[in-house]
Length: 447
Image (cartoon, rainbow, N blue to C red; front, top):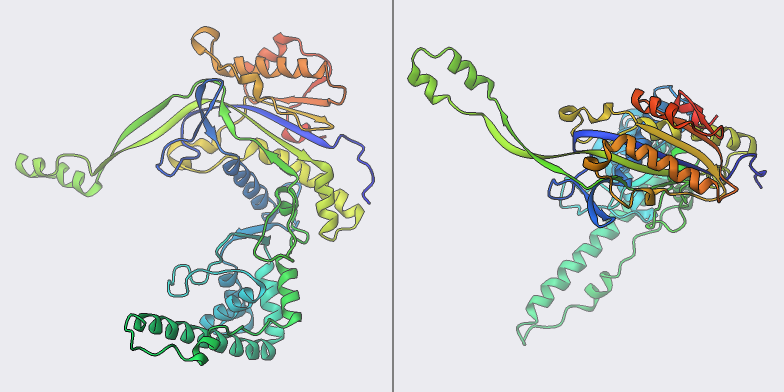
């Protein structure tokens, strides 16, 4: 059992940020996502978009040797594990590429994963669902298959033969069904019906165990943080995530603009610029392409919680010793807070520079349960009457926290971080209590 924490179980994070002319997430029609709260429509940045941005931010830093998780094992969420395994078999073990992918797909099917239609090349070797597994999963599976090549090839030959017999039987039954429209047509042969129930040979136990171990969460820290659910393989462990993330929403009523854009055709403009007479220039008039894009602006509230007990449990269950799990959990907490502050969904990042935004305010504190302060913004901010939404939202958030703190004994270690000089001045004016410590770095929110 893990020793009791010296700190509270939950770390709650609350953030105010202001964005201008961006579109971090959109619906199936390319429109900004919204929700209704407090009787008005608000813009929304979904928790899924936020979590992916934070997870990838932490993973990229770790893989680049930066941040608290530098050198730690991280996960990859993809449908391409068969393709990745096939490439590893080809590059590291000298297998034929096409055959290697086919064997990798068959082995994973033998474990329970389902793949796309084999008649459609674009999805034939992609799993039906995204599988979140450690980044070295393909390397491990390929190494096992190469080390047991003879046994694997024997099983694969039997497996493909059984599938071919089953497919032939299926075609025979379809042909017989079409003939039944003719009353004189004989029934389908009994042997075809029996062939339709052909069961492919089970995967050798050693291979199945090796694949399940490769797909298991193991020591991938981001899987311990964000969790995973893999229903297709019942005996492959699922993980209850240690991070809870709320949908971000504007503290005021949503406002949306439809931005008309005109894209220039460089070749057309060059011809127009060098035209010898006005008639040639007239032929090249007009934009190369026009269209509309939806953009949003606003001040958002977002919230996330880290369950320190669940994080340590996940790491211990994955096989870490208690001391290592404690060290990894501390590192994961620091990197999670950094990602919460730094990461941003990358949709339209080049045309809106949205990923360069910094929070107006971050509030972090510990407690024996999660605390969501969304109700502080149930009444939408009226900028016409109250002033700019950023400072108003900061005042409301801090007032809400002060009020709750006076009624909950478990709230402690509250810290504030701002990247906005006006908000920094506002915090000076407010005369904050000593219980609210101001820090100047994201890592200070958990130190």
